[in-house]
Image 1 (cartoon, one colour):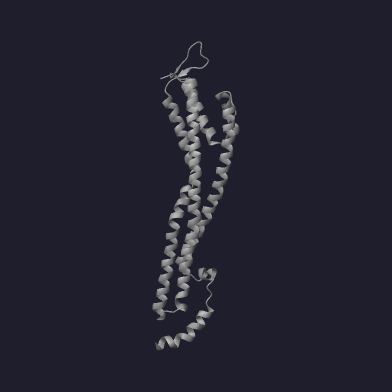
Image 2 (tube, rainbow, N blue to C red):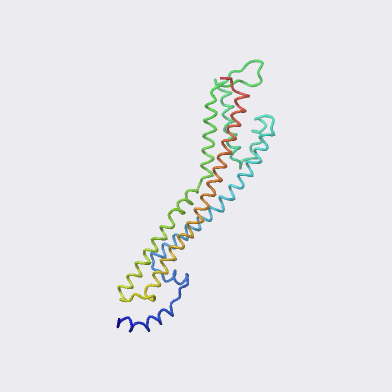
Length: 247
């Protein structure tokens, strides 16, 4: 009790001089906490860069696919579409069409074709080859649009724990100060607790946008994959009706 009363005027003076602003707490934090905050800040910058580029690329992809589908359904033949496919290089549906068209031509030139004199186009067999070529192309395109999306998931799931590390370290520093000074008052523990809470807050600030963006882009990519599969089904139906023998 005597120690506490003796130290009271001093601690009041120290407490009055302490600034609890976030920048002051970060500047006065220990180097492990500062390193943790720097890591979180870097992860946040990368996440926002991915978010902006991914949004722009998906918007561009949707427009490109819309333009190609308009061409596809208005064209009178697959050859006409293939001749204009260079104008739709940004469309992944056009890439899938190109894979299917080239596989059809390869099959027509192979021993899988059976032509008759009164037929303008040969009858083909082995549609499994065409299905595999289209499925492989779809898988490649989906992998492309999923690029860097795992980073958002990783940051969203790990940032709170990285911030928690800074929190634990800050609290440890506060307890060390209590042990060194023998005083458990606000002036002693406030800096350590402040940097600890800031580490937690920044971890959440980094994680929340990353998680929201990951869920948003995952939903959009699922829609793009569904559109690719829908186009593949339409393309296979057209090929079956016009180029393949009845099984």
